[in-house]
Length: 183
Image (cartoon, rainbow, N blue to C red):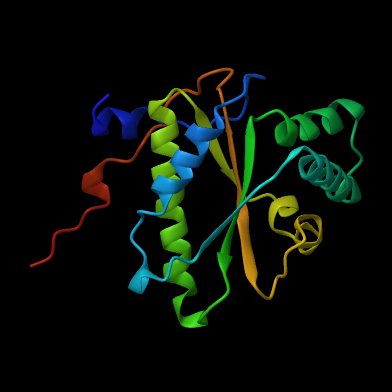
């Protein structure tokens, strides 16, 4: 696939098979993400690959937080747990705390890095999803991960796995409505 085809065919994956993705492939995706442009080469990323025990805690936290807002059926609880437990890999995305003046740039470099990783994975037939649910960024998540909110700012999780069902392409706006040429 050429780069244009790769970019236009990539989809956010919501449903994953139980097939495991090679650890080496996931690590290569995350290594490549470090080539994203970043302000003054500060390398602000921090990635936390959640193992089985951590994922169970995150799934329990997700159900607890959602259940505090609304009653959940057992079917909904199972679906929420599966969203966290079923993908082959779950990588929590964080930024190292630093100069507040650079937070916007640091977030931009994280987003570029996630796109690089996602495109690399997609080329290999592996799907991904950047999720920013409260259970991935909330105050209690820091406790689950054993990290300090003074040292890191959580920005979500990258779910990685073999897609169960391909998603259709959403419509995109025409460039002429977005690109404005100035004199």
